[in-house]
Image (cartoon, rainbow, N blue to C red; front, top):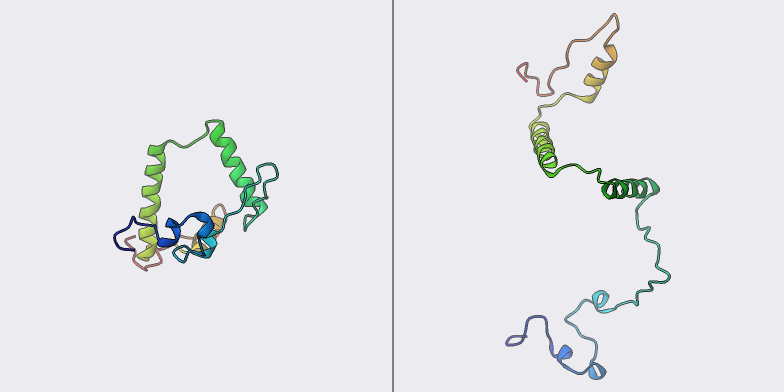
Length: 123
């Protein structure tokens, strides 16, 4: 293919009536299907009803102007990244400990604040 335009092979340079199967394209890419706009196929792949409902809700919210401003998204994303770094470094409270503590609120046996999973008392 040297000396020719990128993406062209000798088969592509022949008239369509004289072409044999072109080996420069993957067979799945080379085959095309006619798109039927009158009777489109339903897209179901691996989307369940709950996922499709959430997508629909998001589309309705966007159309109604109920969106999160970009600056808020950036701020929240930064907080999520920071929390992810803390968890990866071992600084978090175990779910079971947090749940037990919260469920103890307002009882006669209220538990102390749970400790960090790293074991440090300074977290």
